[in-house]
Image (cartoon, rainbow over all chains, first blue to last red):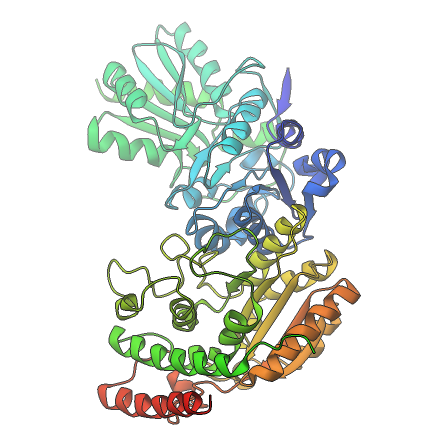
Length: 311
Length: 286
């Protein structure tokens, strides 16, 4: 079934509040898009809409966290991280508060709204903040589990959610372990390390590679920070080649995090699949994935070229 | 007449706090004396005449909450917390030094009695909004105070927060504007005209009270009136407190140059003499 990770947001908040988790949500006029409206309907006294004011959104959530609430924030990734960066840095992270940013509409699959609304630098921004934990769930089920993990683990979290439907990768009863990368397919010839909706693309790429006789290992790096060094390094040492796959700039996100890890511990040839230092543009999500080279075919080609170049 | 808070004690505390402010900044070799001194009477009035708090129990749930949005005035907060027994006076000489809990701007992870870290201007009122909301959700009756500078009101987020507080009927929230008229680059109204601060807040739906920010008696009355007006109108309140930047040190008063620099040894001696004379006078008046 194809459901968007954003659809997990409001639904999971409703479940958490029903389980007596002291959860609140602060939204900036995008409750229908982010699905926090679902939570607002069920728990109106736990929902606050600040209007179009993202800086206030983050700091109101911070204040609520100061009083012991588990405070989730909405809005789109571009505004929640970009417009309110100083609030996230100087108040949420510097004070180590229980604020959980779960903005939606990350990456190019925002689609027709275009480059102004397609956030491609959020992982870079959030990953650089001391104390911030960065989660990129691969599907709806993983997103629900990630939101639960964030709600029940103290401190700041960033949970990256998307607009478009993605095929199920995990079962509905899946759990989300902070700091763990999940090996979804074992292989020996190349490691495909992916996050978010690129996990599905990487699994498809592994099928394509298998047809060429290449046995790819697929890892869902669901937590970008703290990154699962053991799993990634073990895979890199085993396969000798790593391709990272993300719906994000190749600067500062998953590709950078994995490169940092490999360079210091197990240097192997690698390629980064991602948006190559340009802004997004209007188009349909599937067209944009093709346009920016973010499909299974692109991943498979990069893997083959990587292996060939090292011979 | 109900018990009037002892404003003589507030004056004495403020006088001691001013000396601490000057001496700790001199020892640190850097810091912000101007806006700390302008806020000394406001903060002394809050901590020793208005707020329910206990220096021995910084986390007591029923305490009123204070957010120093103008975080660069950290020395005035440290002086008040020390005076109130949150930590020993020996820490005051560690301001801005490696390993100190007296960070250059307030750090809630290091300092007891600091609710939230501040320093990046324009954020405190939003945070205070969230605190007021959270306490109200839990059925509490604690009051929330947020001290801002007037120059700080140039930050757009302040007005996002002002809108929100009125919309959410945050009657437990009282903001105070330390209106000393100066900012780093000069007079506020020359750098970026603030217009009529009180009327701006009133237009956003706040209860507004103008007060002399160096008169504890007037401020005690103003905080009482603000509380009453907030309760009556189900709205947040703001005290627009007229102050003098650098108040209490003759050569610092009304001089933007003293926004963010430490006095020399000679200047510290002169300031100390002036402030000790005030302490002696306030003490003799008892």
